[in-house]
Length: 65
View (spheres, rainbow, N blue to C red):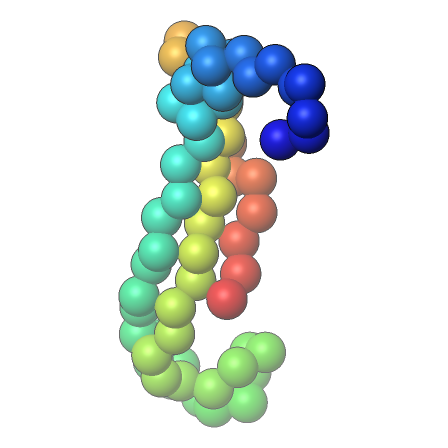
């Protein structure tokens, strides 16, 4: 934080409650190689989900390696 900056802990807590990250480990087995952007095999993705508030649905914000 910057000198003299006030932290709104309730706002920070609310924002953290509305963001979650899932690390997904999966295996893909294509029937025919070379049809997708990657080959068959194990991969890991990280999915970031967000929601407006506790009554809102979770939505995927981003995903990737």
